[in-house]
Image (tube, rainbow, N blue to C red; front, side, top):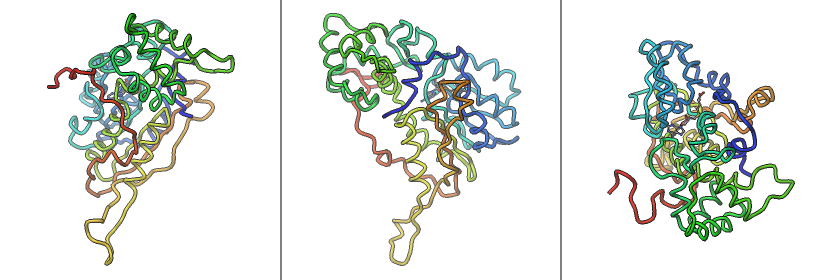
Length: 343
Ligand SMILES: C[S@@+](CC[C@H](N)C(=O)[O-])C[C@H]1O[C@@H](n2cnc3c(N)ncnc32)[C@H](O)[C@@H]1O
């Protein structure tokens, strides 16, 4: 079963401020030093960035959410040139910096995003069915009100591991004709009414659909895969990669990437030169999870897992999505339309 933020978001009340997850372990894996440059691909509330700056290293901090960037401007101004904050998707991290001694990613949504009902990530409070971290592009309402039932079922089934994916998708398709879905609570209530809720169910029946919509709307798996390839291109030999994920689909992507890149096939008399593959990373430990004290202080940490690796001197390989074994999802476009800026 997929463990993840989706459960955490809706089953557990959280603090208004974002508490950095696995901070000590992330710092150990990154081991930032004065004179180094570290890319924090998920600036959020700046928890990791502040701690990295305190080590004396410079930080290039990226976030796709304009609110996170705006809130980081003061820290940037006080940093005496040590911090640059950039609004961008982290898949472009190698366009924001020439080279780096460390790259850290803390995947998912921040407490600020979840706790603001108007961002539409949660059904604990009513809000617009939005869920866009970047506050631009296709919203969750666009997906729910225009994608075919078959496509919705694939999104809910794969990205939410929702058992009733087909039933929920067909219910959405028949209801939206007269009455489109615009609000988080409306969608959550419609799902609960349609599939019911057994007394033993720990989570709300809409939790998995909300998780799937969030991952789809923000192309979270594609972003993560591209960011790993970008980190490989930008990290110096000896550079550290540290990635914290919150559910099994993301963790699998990181695990498969590190396993693929740590795998080395060197030529022999019997092997053609073309089959030689040098390891571009060395695995640095297994998956690290929070201890009980961290989980009780911050329940949102409970499904977190850190994986780390160290860049070797070998040239970066071509980015090939096949290593992740991801199924094909519907194109993130409104049927019959192009995304803004596309032809
Ligand atoms: C879990 S929070 C990071 C919290 C941060 N480590 C801290 O200690 O405050 C994740 C942040 O990453 C951002 N984010 C998620 N996916 C992103 C992407 N593909 N590109 C850029 N930012 C992204 C979100 O907007 C959010 O602010």
